[in-house]
Image (cartoon, rainbow, N blue to C red; front, side, top):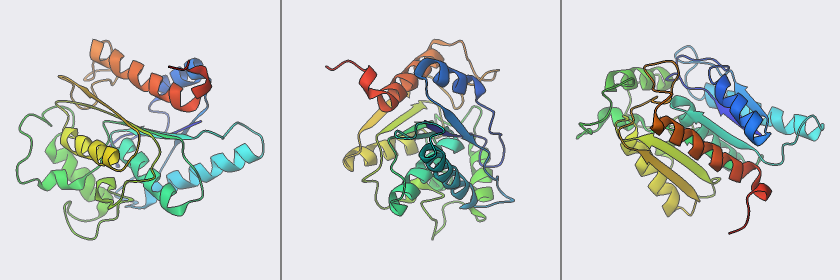
Amino acid sequence: MLLWLHGGGFVLGEADADEDMFEAVVNQLGCAVVSVDYRLAPETPAPGAVEDAYAALRWIVTEATRGNFAGDRIAIGGASSGGGLAAALGLLARDRGEIPLGFQLLIYPMLDDRTCTAAQPNAYTGQFIWTPESNRFAWSALLGQAPGGLDVTPYAVPARAERLDALPPTFIAVGTLDLFLDEDLVYAHRLMRSGVPTELHVYPGAFHGFDMDPPPGVPDAAVTGALKRDYMAALGRALIPDAVPPD
């Protein structure tokens, strides 16, 4: 079972935005997908979206208990802001201790509002699709205040979490031109230092949303194919481990 959170900078997007991916997961892995139509900012600031996602998790567990589908292995995932929400959901589920998670799939996740206020921003990222201006607007909408301030909950900004231990195995993918490159690398490093099995992929020359179809993404590019193969393989290992031959 994969619980998916769509992207859109916390302010846009719909639950059916990634139907092609859902179809591939169902057909190739035989796993069900639940996509959450969570409430959007600024009308609903944090922690509304992550609470919606947690409610969906509880629904999955209830339906699995009733025998409507198998819920013994639950992965959470998302792309861009959805990846950030998935990371926040992982922290919330860990801290509440009610629902065990098996995996988190974070595709160029939006993890840290402090990227907006970095003293020395990366000069080579954020020029395409998702810019620093877009980033500041989105974080301000979600938080209800300017990004980079004090007293920000990690259930809105996962990079603010003091502890990243006891999280499920994690897949992180990001391109070298993506505004989120540095924050994603830092988060992956912190996960590894916390003992969380972490698979990190950095795609050269890839900008934010490079896999989107239609353009400005490049759905037919080799790097897009590589991303899709990598995350499908990781999901397969997480959700159907018995199908993977031993080393």
